[in-house]
Amino acid sequence: MFGINYIKIPPSHYVMQYSGGKLARAGAGLAFFYFKPSTSLVVIPVGSADVPFIFNEISGDFQALTIQGQLTYRIQDPKKLAQLLNYTVNGAPEKYLSDDPQKLPQRLINLLQVQVRAEIQRLHLREVLYASEQVANSVFGKFAGSESLTTLGVELLALSIQAIKPIPEMARALEAEAREELLRRADQAIYDRRNSAVEQERRIKENELSTEIAVEEKKRQIREAKVNADLAVELKEQQVRQSKLNGSIALETERKKLVAAHTENARAEADVQAYAVEASLKAFKGLDPAVLQMLAVQSTDPRLMAGLALKEMAQNAAKIGNLHISPDLLQTLMESRDAKSDGK
Image 1 (cartoon, rainbow, N blue to C red):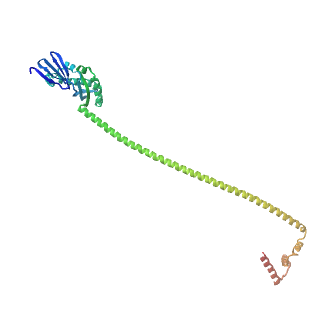
Image 2 (image 1 turned 90 degrees about the vertical axis):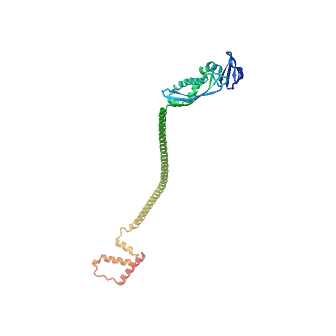
């Protein structure tokens, strides 16, 4: 009515009222009346805004990439931005008189792409695919403090790179290469597992052989101990036998000495007896044998004398013509022989 309007700005927007070419009031979340014919209202959103982006770049090894992410920012100095872009509204916060508010996100994306391109071109394809977080952190550190954002009065709150993808052909090639690498690793794992099994089997065999060697060594030691014990027993037995033999030899030596002594004594006794007999017979040495015979038979048995007479006659049988022996004499001689036999 009469050109006087009322406007109410939310707290997430910053409003500046220009009247007669001068700034009349400015602030966030204001509500006031104004005279429309002579007033210009500039409303700038100062809350955070998310800007998704996707663009294509080239890696350091000339491979095409698609980079997708999101940029979060807020307007920190609305007055600077109002000097560069037209945020004038027509009686309501969202009714802008130009399309400059839509240009800010694209301008930020263009500035961001320059920073991302510088990082991507430093890396090769394989490195880039695994370096999304690294690239995001590096770009955020450089872009947040850049003069371009300071001039616009914009503060960068967050930057995330959600995906870095190669072209489909290269993705398939990398996938095939990765698959082959995985298969090779699987084969290597199988080989390593088999090799480990063989190694374990070898160690088991070595342990078994070592155990057998140790057992055989113990058996050999036991046999040697038994042999040594047998040798010791045999040595003791030999010593005992040697002692017995030495005792037997000593006994036989003593016996030999005893027999020699007995022999010597017997020889001496025989010599004495022979000397005695020789001495006793020395008196009869010069006598006639007939005389001696007569002396011998004087004290003998008459039957002996009869036998001597018969012997004498036998010696002179050539001179005897006839010899008659009576039965009584023959019986007497036979009885004499039988008596001698009984006496023996």
